[in-house]
Image 1 (cartoon, rainbow, N blue to C red):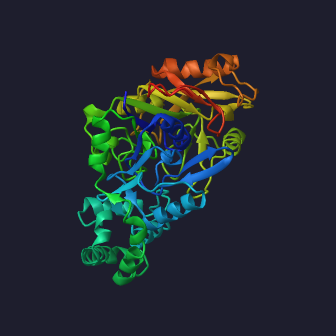
Image 2: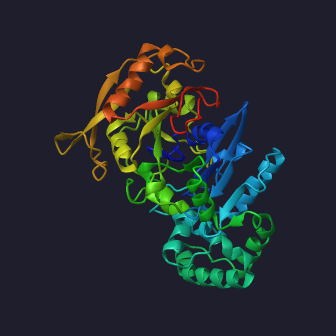
Image 3: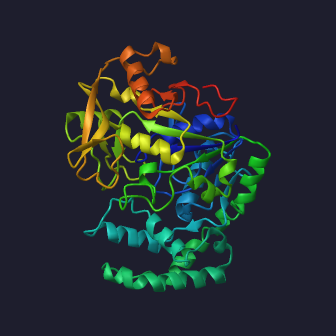
Length: 428
């Protein structure tokens, strides 16, 4: 297999950074195909932590090409900041890091609008990074694309038109729109750093696929936050399901060989929206504190809850997930009780389906599983895991009819059991 999509199967924050970083040991190219700086991936290598918001997780592998695809929303200032951090860490990226000239640009007025909306009564819990308004401009066909930064005259025209369109909205939200020239000047100041990266990346990706290179497509957020398949309207503004890899990077669906779904051993959610298995007690605090469930972008605490199997079955179906990478199962060690949602009760009737349109009133039906207290972070063989841990994993596999082929037992790259099963040469 040469073309693989790694996708979050829950509400994001499943640990994609670590898993993608592991998989890129055998990847020739990593392509980020959706989202923007609202998605932080945390990499822990040799005890050092690196948080990337835009740059693909494969950047730490010197022989891996990294692509920011056209499906992304890119904040140039954030991207330059990440380049600066790579420079400080002596990570070489010249000639192997490229950003699509067709990716849309997040501007200061996008961030302003996002922030003003989130301060009002209709807030949905965004990261206030301007991603939603940027995609709104894209859909309205008035967006600024990364390649436009190379033409000052065109850029000034596009910014002027967008600011004119947004000005009534900004004023209605209680603020004043920015000066066009100030926005243009701030963007143009970043162009010298970005020019070496900007390229038509679709042919690069297509060429790698045709040459049967190992290409990894990296998603952002999770399936339950997809603009079409998520818990609308509490969703992100892009296609975070596996299908987004095609439109966000420029390959056809027949060119995708495999889909690896990332699943946290419990559930978390950031921002608003229904969360039927949410815990607002000591168990929820345990998951948050032990699992370090705080946003890598915002630092805000994540909502925590029991694993939701109907939701996972739904994600397996809409993504075409072939295998599961299970993360953070070590966080469950020491729990006084351990529950898993196996079905729902909706309007007095039980269903095995994920009632995505009735989540606000759906009642989860749980099964209790055995707990454990062992520290499993040093275990590297699935058969050596405590019996209760093995049964927990087998319970997931049986109920979602999908094999767990990789198990993360700690935050570091080496705290991993099994193989991802996606590239023949991977053996972790």
